Image 1 (cartoon, rainbow, N blue to C red):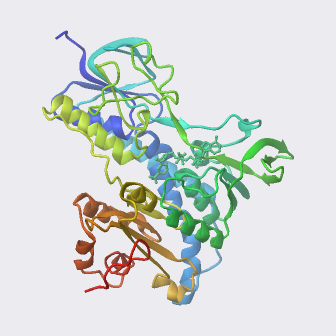
Image 2: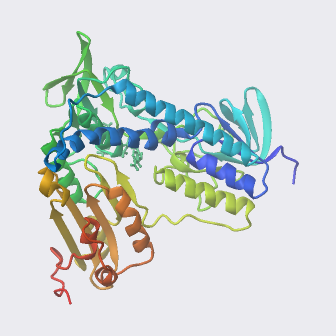
Image 3: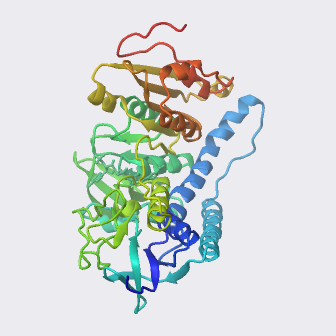
Length: 459
Ligand code: NDP
């Protein structure tokens, strides 16, 4: 074997790249990692972490309102955007330092600058070439904005985290995770919010009951949701933005945010020249051990785009390290990957939607649904309602999907993901004792199927 400078060279210091670098070094590999923007990647800097902090901030508006009927007198309310934005940024900078120190402590060599693959075993950073037995492409993705007239006026999630001023009115375009989360954040922070989605109902791919319930709840709270609508062009008038929609109507706002998906950052870094085949959208096809079409070059995370989720990227990084340096070829099991949409209210979901389950199992299903006002709101009189849903296969009794819209959905769904991984049946759910009084106990007390044939009444 030729003598390389490193056993592994990682390009990209996001969640997946950092995990692969750190664990590989821990297994004795000589590892370098290059990053050109920020340690921690999208999730830490312009994604999961700051978004969740903003999401907490947004929810206080309702918390203050809910407090009154619990006896609290809350003083005059005010919200200061720079305080939130700058405290968030300070926390992110602290995390950047944590990542830096964590990598160094693991013995990884950190390189700052744009990296380019020069050949299947060589990476160039800052004009200097280094060789490696394996190169890992962990470059992540970047917001995509469709090519419409006036696109130069819009912001994406990248900029939304650093806005100079909080807008008075915003239009959020898109119907995925980011659009739903930011519509909830801006609305909660007091911004007049319109969300436009090009299809008939947002969150395509999620369970239909969940999508409909969230749309109802968001509208109740005052978000102006408009479906089957898209922007044709955007102009600037008197310091404000004016969007012309596809039905000819106009909408004005201070800020227009596009959350219309993300694209891998895989172009222009020498991949194709080194023999790595890319898909049309820039994503990198890989085999079960994350090898690209160039055997010494691997890829993970958003650059591959199987699931654009941080915990999936870190699982992939771990699998790569174990496969290459741990003597344990490891694949990632993509079944039952849970996720949450931190909207207002949030969604938690794991497993198959009812529609997916029907495709696989026909009508051999039992669907359980529970829609209710949570206990807290019996006093607060907040009109928000929670929805919980279980999808089970009648023949095997297997629970194949658990979905929820309501407070703490993300926290709750993690445990149910374990249950699904373990192959829990509906009988196991039924025999599990609830925690009282919680919303979560509803998941173990739903006895009557609402669709797909009546289940025998509870024993
Ligand atoms: P998504 O792919 O989830 O959603 C993109 C949305 O934009 C869809 O509603 C899509 O519509 C719409 N869209 C795409 N192209 C156009 C276009 N040309 N014109 C109008 N609308 C368009 O992307 P996001 O940016 O929301 O998020 C990226 C990924 O990051 C997510 O898929 C998710 O995996 C991850 N993420 C996870 C989070 C979490 O775990 N909480 C939070 C944020 C992001 P259509 O459905 O019709 O195609």
